[in-house]
Length: 128
Image (cartoon, rainbow, N blue to C red; front, side, top):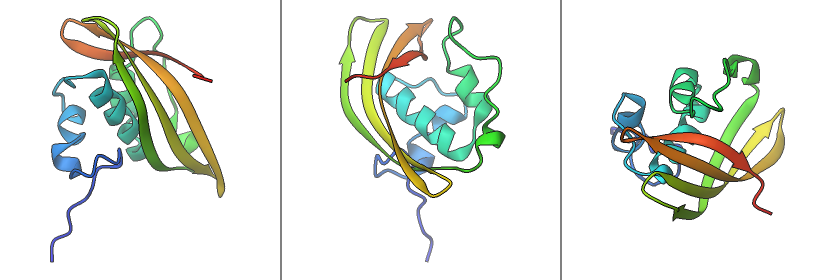
């Protein structure tokens, strides 16, 4: 029997119809879709995609995900999304992961900006 690979972003959809199209170059239609695809890119080690979807003003020169190979991404919970304007949006989420067997949580309020029809991750902060 063929098993469908569910998307790591926990949308309950197959990866092939969830985040994979964005990883292959289709523009994410919303800030939440971009955020989910970036979480999945971290889980799958897609460094180039992460850099491409990072806002030019805040993008690091490298990520070196290979050095973080000990990180295992466990799940994503989207808490809230807000469209501030046509070009600005926020997504609050909790990502669960393990480093060297120790469970961790990243709770972040991410800011996104749309430039020429594409969403980009701008910056993240602690929402608490």
